Length: 221
Image 1 (tube, rainbow, N blue to C red):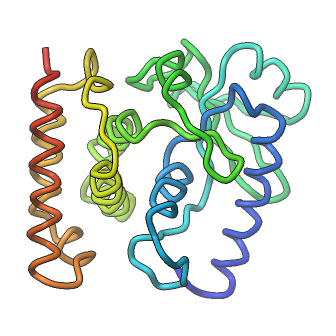
Image 2 (cartoon, rainbow, N blue to C red; image 1 turned 180 degrees about the horizontal axis):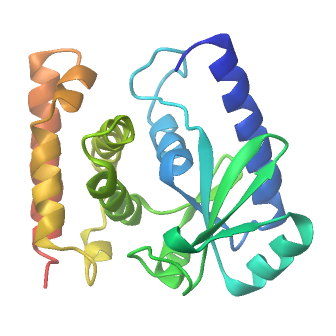
């Protein structure tokens, strides 16, 4: 992204995310690209257009409990997508995907995502560990496509951000050897090499992947 039109779309999405987040500050947890952006943003000295570490999202994914979902139905016109086990709505041109407690196909339970979530710039987001697991699943579903390439770039961002503070035990009960394989593939990917400014930076990123893989492997049952 980077054009004026794309930036306008992102600005609108960002505005709508804040509105919806303010409705449910204690229960709606954002996942996906919005959460990746917010976690990445906290570690960047600038937010300039063209920074490969900051990539805009086209829509917003949120994870909610039963009570908030009931209230959300009163506020927005939701359309169920049974094939993907989610609901969707459009708010002032911005698209939202909604996953509901115990009515979804996401790997990590809502109660765990909520427990370890954090608030960044007024928006509650999933922890990096849980976000990593969910992003691996998205990548596995879409690898080989443009969205899959974006998922790989997001995996690089998440792994890099995890170096500031990683709680490996949050992988417990969820991590699999398939996750380790996906991370290993990403550590050797063209997406990682493109994001690194120098061969040394690429080597450092691969080292970070090795550390996350080690922490995850210790929690695989």
